[in-house]
Length: 101
Image 1 (cartoon, rainbow, N blue to C red):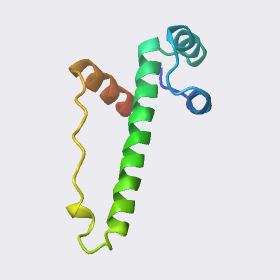
Image 2: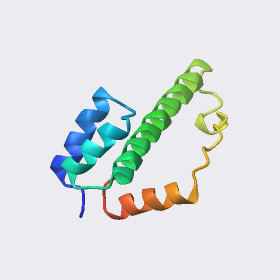
Image 3: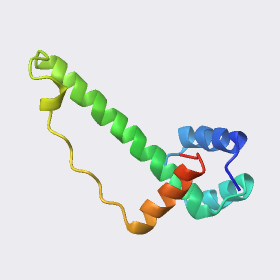
Image 4: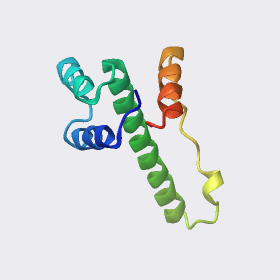
């Protein structure tokens, strides 16, 4: 089943309180949202990655601005990409296909 708007809102609110829920918390959230615990864990991981990507982009923009912007945003060094396991990639793709990421 697809994650409902209510389920996404619940997970977002919980994410604001706890970025990395433990196994018991994941189990409760999974039951409440009618999802697998692994789906909920992947949802939290995707949110954390998106948040850190946003922060890195903000830092790059600040650095470019501090440098006078003469070099432009393309001159800023890119951080290395975090490698995901094939299982994590599949889970993220499945969430995206369902519109839950």
